[in-house]
Image 1 (cartoon, rainbow, N blue to C red):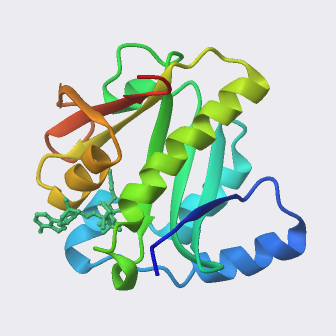
Image 2 (cartoon, helix red, strand yellow):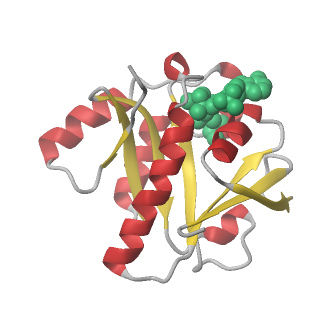
Length: 173
Ligand SMILES: CC(C)(COP(=O)(O)OP(=O)(O)OC[C@H]1O[C@@H](n2cnc3c(N)ncnc32)[C@H](O)[C@@H]1OP(=O)(O)O)[C@@H](O)C(=O)NCCC(=O)NCCS
């Protein structure tokens, strides 16, 4: 069966559904090598729910959360983008280690761009696409984003986790 993902907006579901999803998110794991690339999934979800600028999503496959991601507005410079407002920041992106390598990361990154375009259409804001930074030593991240249509926009040396690539995908084009 072909793989598929569905992004579940954690801020937009009712309390019961959110509680179930947070329970699944609490079970997500990345490999030991990958822990330096991403925060603990449940923590990211809870922080995302608290902050107005953040939109946390469960990445669902076959009805179960297999990952998490957050879209954030007004924060693109955290990924080395020249300004905060013209792009959504994609952050806190992870697929559970037991589900990696099946194309779910690629599908979820592409779905994040579609979700961001919907947020811009709904709320305004004028963003033209989605930006993220990914560690140069993270081949799975680099490949998943590239396969989802993100384009390398150069190196970012900010932050504390070593050299990063700035990757961007426009809503159109
Ligand atoms: C990055 C991540 C979300 C990708 O999820 P995924 O579901 O495995 O992604 P996909 O299956 O769509 O693609 C993985 C790609 O990485 C490649 N890959 C994986 N490990 C690799 C390695 N060690 N060396 C080279 N390529 C590698 C795979 O071959 C695949 O590319 P391909 O389809 O062109 O062959 C997942 O690895 C993850 O959660 N990592 C930990 C958190 C993280 O790094 N997040 C990103 C922070 S910016």
